[in-house]
Image (cartoon, rainbow, N blue to C red; front, side, top):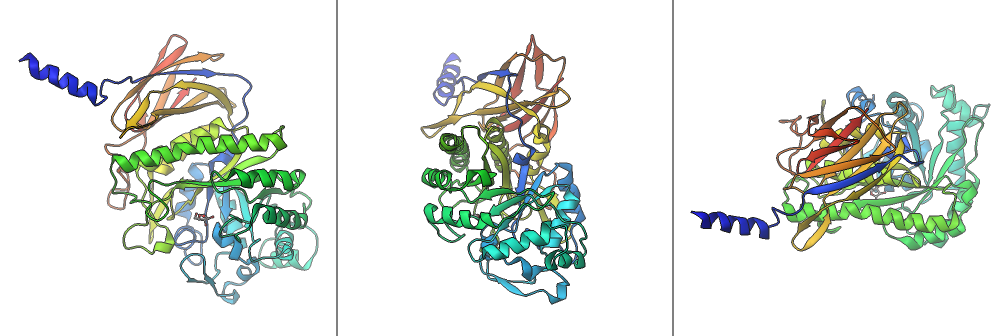
Length: 504
Ligand code: AHR
């Protein structure tokens, strides 16, 4: 009778079931940077069904989508691209809708573009969301004159033909647009430039981006593609940093390769593991770009704006491949939680980020089907993490066990923590291990508290999604797995889960 038990023991030991699941964490309240709320920003390109069908019906903004996004306190929204920004001519899409130019979106699917959603509609959307607009200007096919005119239309309070045109189009007051991208992915779809050539373009274009009274610009230069450190080095050396608020960086989580990214819903642990390893690379990429930036800007005045990130998978079967419509699973929520922890822990340099892309495109927060709408697992991560917005970051030290798969290893647990203006501490923890629960033992330095409460986001399978048949399969729930222990706390983190704790 004893033999089978012994064999089971051996089997369990050899498959890692008895491996360490204790995690030790220290949280210190030292003088850390504020976590800019703009890290929790979003990106909405004129691509597929993001604007049309997503935000815009053809003649009005969808208030169901706006109401959902208001709840998570979207701080900033980027538009009109992406790659589309460098083929976009703003003057085609203002004034009476029937008289607007009809153009072709040659970047995304050669679809006919009626331009019914343009500058004034975008600014109206931002007003409804209560967020800051972030407009990407056209360097690829535009001119400095066109960019200068757009800014005058938007931000000039005095009398001019362009500011009068804005008034005629229904907006008396200037919009005070501040975040301004000088091109997008200029190393690729934005014009295939070298960093040296782009640096010169930036010098030229940015010279004509004027600060109108009440609207000082925050100019964002088109930065590197993922781990292209050379691009960052050349930019930091050559562009006028006194006239630069930030440089962008784009990095997508890919579970396969660019040709075969893998399904958003049908995948096994091999693909899950690869996606998590790819997502965690964000930490190394930010650290290395930040180190280069430090050489030219020790005061960390120039921000790193990760204004495109998220998981990019194959499109849903039967949908237009150029529309980049993908479903969103618990796996993707774990990626969002992990990435936001990485941003929080780099708050000294990362002061803006934008998940790609809000509605119906890539790692969306909201999916729509005609007049129906649902919230994805990723939406709920932004809902849980909104407590970090503008809070002071705390220093975290974590000794995580590995999550091992097929001979490769990544840290199973990641974390970030902050103290808000009311004194409450928030700790966001992610357990990427799909099979093993972890017990985190936290000791606190310079922090005292009386109670700990929490919320959790998890589901039975990492492939679980919300769809129009089951729109609330993956959603947060109250969490009772954390307890105060001495001056610290212990928390039982279920496998593949995101937990956000509040210490008061
Ligand atoms: O988000 C989709 C595309 O990815 C954007 O248009 C582009 O900037 C990036 O390559």
